Image 1 (cartoon, one colour):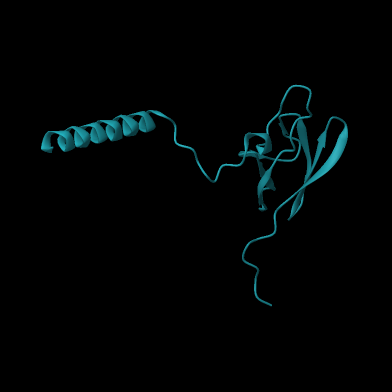
Image 2 (cartoon, one colour; image 1 turned 135 degrees about the horizontal axis):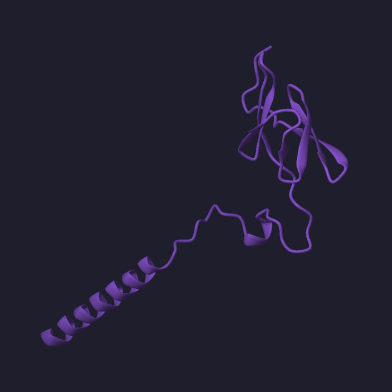
Length: 113
């Protein structure tokens, strides 16, 4: 009877280790990642996505805007857009002959009144 329980214990241990080895070889799933169909990106036949305004820098030597990680001045081009004007909360760009405003998101912390 004792031999049967040892065999069962060895079998269960072997199954657990094989399951763990298989699970560790796979890429873990990120539960916070949105579904693939909701992730922005350019697919064939679709229009290019809108550039993302990340920061506006106003200074004595001119204004700069950080768009998609690139620091740009008025007149600079990035992807298919040209910067026309930089304001304290918006940037005016021109894409495909059309003008658009890129807006800064509202700050998370609002100043007190």
